[in-house]
Length: 459
Image 1: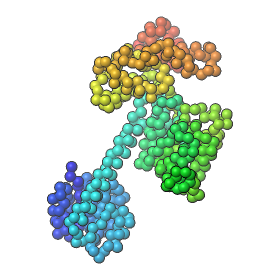
Image 2: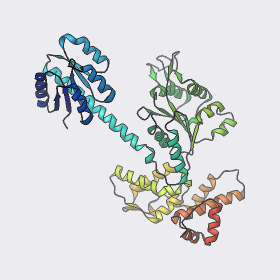
Image 3: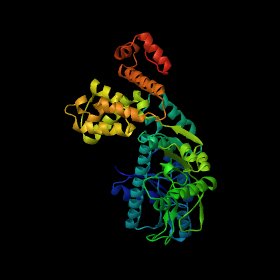
Image 4: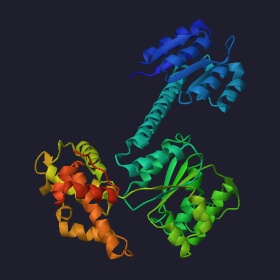
């Protein structure tokens, strides 16, 4: 598609010449002699590049440039000026003009500048598209949730996102903590700024310190150049610190200082830099237990735990499993150019009954495997991995997930509650069918529903 060039100049001869030269190169050109009409045109039209004369009555090219920088920062502006006004063109470059062209101009010079501006505009438009795509992909509206546990999570995202407060996301591995962190960022006023992720467990302490704070040239062997750390890269945006419970005591002290003073110092440096970042942290550890054991600083814990969000494990949000499975099936159908239409009821029964120790991440892995290896256009129980169908292994997995300090009566209650909930899920929460599956009377089932805080359809 031809790029759209807007030309502003009060000299009509130049407008005719420029229009002819650029249209011969295949550009779509709009010419206006009144710069104020040009600004109105920008409001309603798609423009890739603005080419404006510097001296015009009523409004200068610098005025046009400043308006574009403020309202259309993605549109490159080229300034045309007479040979004797180079100083004005240099000043325009200082405040953000893409390039300047002197009158009279050589056609080759003009076309080269326009070509570079068009390429820059295309890059800017692609960046805008990618940012919008990422924002849409990671908005809270794309978090699949039906149950109360995840409704509470999304409510917390809504309430926490507009603030600057630190957020601590708690939950088992694979529950989607990073997805929620991104949703907080994309719902916040910082959405246009960077979202930077650091996994605190993936790097050894020395490397992690440099990764977070950056380093000066020569600060250690191999530091051949200055490098900005993740704190600086995330400036004005959000820094997501995953597995925060793995920080060493020394790095805990440094992080606490950043949270208190909003300043950082690169490794090997003496200069401090102000940083404006929002910290979102996540862990699968019980940080309060770590504090009690002296493994995690209490003051840092309270700094991080301003707003806490608990991600429920998948076994506690079974009503979401069919929705998540369908979502992952669609994803891997597209990636593998396949047309698997869905799951049989037998396959879905196994998926909703399984304990999912690896949570949503494990479910995604299973659906991807089944999409690739399915024997027909529908995923059946025979297509599922053996561990999903091994009821003895499932029971052992469920027992292993129970807290070790429970006494027998509490343990039996938890198991019974889980079985009742599984029966409800398998029967679409219809009480009569769930009672039949469990071999209970309807009144006995209703007693247990009340006991375990569950609900079902009365019919």
